[in-house]
Image 1 (cartoon, rainbow, N blue to C red):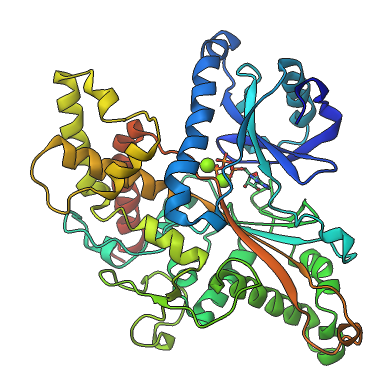
Image 2 (image 1 turned 90 degrees about the horizontal axis):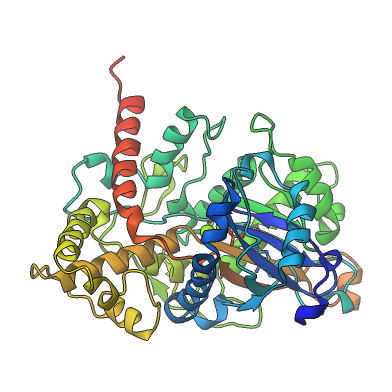
Length: 465
Ligand code: ATP
Ligand code: MG
Ligand code: MG
């Protein structure tokens, strides 16, 4: 990318989360991830330009040196930090403003730090358009925590039985964040069982909230509505998907063809999630098994009598197995972490300079990674044990909040497929994104939030009649 040639007309609004705004290039398969800052007075913002730059560098280091080794080279694209002209950023900020959803406008784009992250556009498959006229479809899933916690530090029994996502739904509904409960349960998606994964994905399609987005040729075609009362438009999605599943026309004429298309679509997503990351691999994969935690959430709508005994298990190299493994670094639960956080805080009160040696605010390098990997299993009362577990917890939190992108497109058309009789074949690629650090300072908030969610769940579901 050439600094002096940056032109806001080459870029368009692509999407955003809580922390960043993403713009995509009109011709190249590239995006810029630009951080968001509170929309208060600009004096405050200006003051933090230096910190914003530090923060972006930290995000990239963390992705490169911590998350990539843990999740696997092939799934993670750390990108690079790029210097951007302030004028470009100001123009870009004006340009995207009108596209932004209202509910995200409590923050504004950072136009002071003069930098951003440049990443490949994962909603696209490079060079694909040369081979087929149908643009790639990309499914973005934010799967959230895929296991039931199993820590002896937990004080409420329901945490052993009902997963965090399902409990959190009740709290979010009560606080007006969403208007309907999602029936999606992460434990079904992470089960490795095709039936349960199918149900999980179907429930995501019916109530995507911020856990599902679908793109076609890099354009968002399906997501939750800005107006929370509106249902997602599945019929419109089916129209988009129809050309990708032409064989369904002949085979199921008259029999709710829309349903057949969605069914096939879900199966493509499932196979990609169970694969080793791209469509050019084969062989029977080894399975990953959860040993300590219960495999089923009691709040999931999946019928319990249909769950076979034991774990189906995810293929060891699959994207979900990788994410789950990192999520499970949180083996003490926030209730076990909070006292360790306080131990660290107490220590820092006495020895404030130790904050640097303990790498609380980074740098996120090999040495940070060593602390994460070599943390003791037993608490020996030391601050080293405490900080090791706190680091592990933060890494796990990143994995509980990341997104998976599955991008697929029809394979080259050959004579056989032109007859539209066979099931279509797809080429796909799977990646993990949004691997930001979770702040050390956020731990007390997480502790309080956990107790609010659990208490609210108990009150709302177990109230006496
Ligand atoms: P969250 O609130 O989920 O933490 P965030 O603010 O950290 O989100 P991201 O999730 O990284 O930001 O990016 C916001 C959105 O931009 C994503 O949901 C995704 O749709 C899109 N996006 C991000 N990175 C890429 C990429 N490399 N290629 C294509 N789209 C991307
Ligand atoms: Mg995100
Ligand atoms: Mg994020």
